[in-house]
Length: 115
Length: 111
Image (cartoon, rainbow over the protein chains, first blue to last red):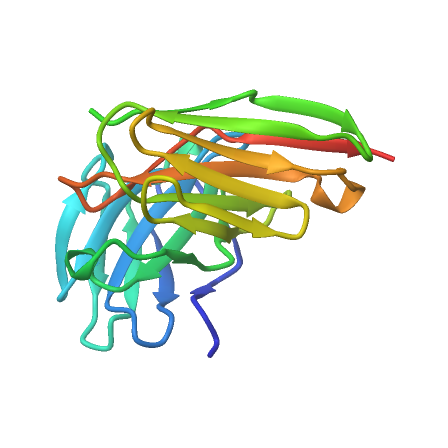
C-alpha cells in the first residue's frame, strides 16, 4: 500500500499565477481533506471532498478550489497566488467519517513557495 | 466552536527525563489523535484515542484520554534525542467533518 501520495513535492510560483496540487488517497479511503500549514503553525483545514463533492469548507477564499475524481483522487487549485499562500499543503485521506470517526493519514505534502 | 489548546508550546529537556504534554478541548468529542511532525516533513500518526479512559503506549510515549475533563495527555518517559519533533493533538468535531488542531508542542531533547 503506497499510502497517501502527493505531487509535486516542491513548487515555486510567481504572484498572480495559478497552481494545481494533486493527491491520491490511501487504498480504500474515499474521503480527502486538504490542509494548509504555514511555517511554525498547525494545519488549517481548507476543505473536504466526498463522493466528488465538497462537503465541508474552512475559512479560505474562493481562490482555493478543489475537485475529487471517481477514483477518489483529488486536486487543489489556487488562483491569483499571493505571497501569503506560501506554505506546506497537506492532503489527508480517511474512510467516510459518517461510518465512524476514523484516523486520517497524511501525504508527504507539497511545499509551495510564492515569489 | 471547538477549540483545542496544547501546552506547553515549546519544551526543551534533557535525555532521560520524563515530561507530559497536555491537550485540552472545548466541546464534546470522543475521538482524539496525536501526530508527530519532523521539520519539513508531513504528519505521522502516533495514537488514536477512541473513548473515555483510553490509554495507548508505544515505546517511550504513552497517550491517554479523559473525555469528561476534555483532556488528553502525551507522556514521554526517559526521553531520547530521537523523540525531538513537534507533536500535535487533533480532535474530531462531531457536528463537522474536519479535524481541529492544537498549535503543536515543539519538543527538543538535548543529549
